[in-house]
Amino acid sequence: MALPLGWAVAVAAVGAIVSMFSGHVNFAPGACERLEPFLSSQMVGQELALRQISDAICDHLAQQEPRRPLVLSLHGPPGVGKSMFHHLAAQALYNRRIHDALRCPGLDCAGYKVLYGMDYTAEERQRQHTLLRAALLEHLRQAPESLLVVEEYDKLDCPMRGFFRQLLENGQVANVSLNKAIVVLESNLGYTELHDLLLRAGDRSKIGAEEAQRVLKDMVFERWLAQGCEERSDTLKMVGLVSFFLPFFPLERRHVRQLFGMHLARRGAELQRQKLGGLQWDPLVLDFLTSKVDFEGDFPIEGGKEVGTLMTRYVSRPLRLWTAAQQEATEQRKRRKKTPAGGQQQCEAKEAAGAEAWAPSSGRLRVDESGRELTIEPVQALAWPGAVT
Image (tube, rainbow, N blue to C red; front, side):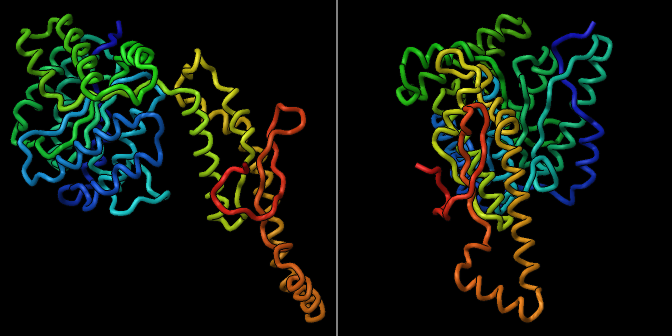
């Protein structure tokens, strides 16, 4: 019978990554300065957590020889930015310059390691523990300045929790130091508590960091204590090893609308990069897309997870057709420039009369007359970026 507890790691993948290391992997210079602006430009609704995270990481990086690893415990429902945070943080920590071509994980983020939970039978448990421990220690040996993520850490079984407590408490196991690492413990635990906290406060800006930390810390302590893996004193010690318990609150309708705007801006930036004009949009477009998301009251049921799906469903096709038309217009312009002498003179005269007639134009995304689809129409060039207001 498969058990919902326990941990494994793709050992072959770890081995492949480790074999590609040349020397130790370190955090890139300037990581602190890059981190908060980058996170803030890509994420919405989690200002309280991101502010604390940025300050904590900057303080940790400022220490030449930290006495212990920085341990961040992230809590909240799925789809609100927990995984996105450490994906983005890896780019800021390991790359001197952040740009769209970078992808994590990958060679640019060799110190970034995510451990995922997996089910396995009771007979496999000891073998999987041994493999995980060996792979993790080898990774830390090659990348002492690691961004190490443990997803669903609340589901660690007793032996693995003991191993992690030993690793975090001592900072060193089998001659491998963890003190320079940043450890992210990620969990969906706390959704109910954060939801209630948000409803009581009426506004997330009114919730203090200490209040959220206390609620989450008490919740984790009670859950671990109930599992009976160790003495109460050891449970207290394990909870005390966590530097920050951080709230990732449920998103609200306004955040979903903001996410759609960010996705549209990225699509427009890609058009500009290809020199195919730009993309504008009517404010009703954001209302239209947001109306397609499933909400429970003011909270999206799946957080921001539906945003990508709905962009594909309603935006990708008209944008693809528009892009193809822009590319064809550009090709026609190039062909006209290559006409014989007489034709060339005629073409130049036309361009002198109105060069914009040949240049790629901006597209304006709007809701069509049926109210059920989106369409793109050409507009006069407008300053980028910006939705049409």
